[in-house]
Length: 84
Image 1 (cartoon, rainbow, N blue to C red):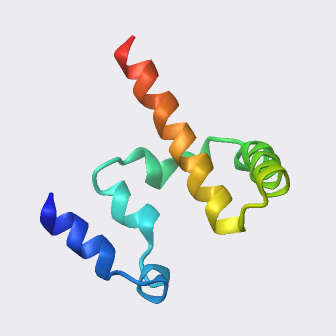
Image 2 (image 1 turned 90 degrees about the vertical axis):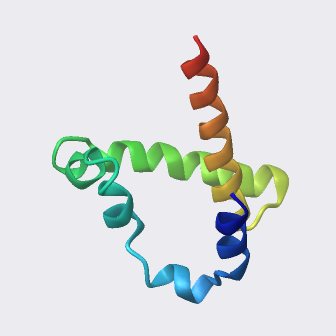
């Protein structure tokens, strides 16, 4: 775990932009490579944009902070559902 934490700390925004995260994660989770052909991405995207904008306005978060908070909330909800 320490190695992963070290890599995260050393990674900057410029390096992150060079990585196709969907492609990288799809090696472990193949659904990421195929869902765009099945899912109404625009519909879900619209709802996600509303949530992001709400976080930005209500809490004066930057775009990045709003995305990180929303991502963390989604993860926390996922963990709760897994426990059931």
